[in-house]
Amino acid sequence: MRFDRLVTTIRENDPDIVFLCEFNRGLGMSMVNALKDRYSHFAIDVGLNATGLESSFFIAYRGELASPPLYIPFKEERKGMNSGFFMFETPDTYYVTTHLKNHEGTEEDTRAQLAQLKQILSHIENEWIQKRVVFMGDFNFERNSQQYQLLMEKGFIDRLSTGEETCTNAMQVHMDNLEEAVVSESIDYMLVLDRSQKKSQLDLHIVKSYIRDEYLHEALSDHHILIGVLA
Image (cartoon, rainbow, N blue to C red; front, side, top):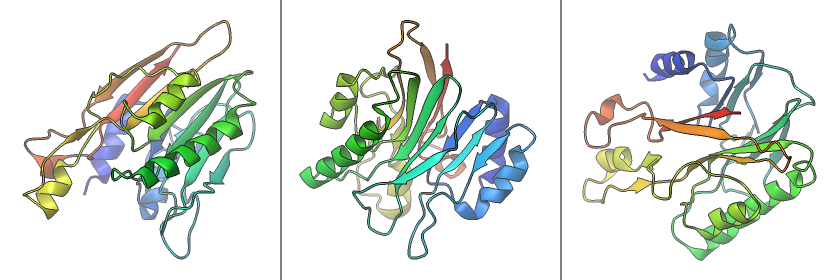
């Protein structure tokens, strides 16, 4: 029901790169057909999984690739889902996209997320001296967490403020448990790391996908859209 509005939203904003997570792979080719006049490269059916969910990523890119894209499954397995991170290289940038494990407030969840982050960082650490890195996705942790601090210590720049809402549980509460408290979350990211003398700038803003207290049936997603412009 939301597909046509999602296509319209993408086309109106017209980004050079589109990254969607929790995207139904059954709609992958339909999305390719809807956007193939705008983009030269697509990644669908990423991390196919015969016994559960795939990674549920959709990526579209227009421009030149400097090397073949990579999908790397997490060593820290996620039950029922083939999760990992997707990476592609352009002439001046490495783009890394992921959807980390859900965090339900336990120490085990923190440990698992840190293990996933460290695997990603270990993979790209040898590359980021040569090119800037853009790291984005649903990280499932807040901007005051141990996981967030790890990325800041590595030199990544975040243009959103702690507590700036990117996601809500309002739709889930509305559907499943009206007694549960509605909360806002700040768990979606687009970070940049540039150790060159040029020091890239990232202008980041949020396009709202929902109005939390009304019209939930018209929400495009329970996550807002992040749009970044690199300079």
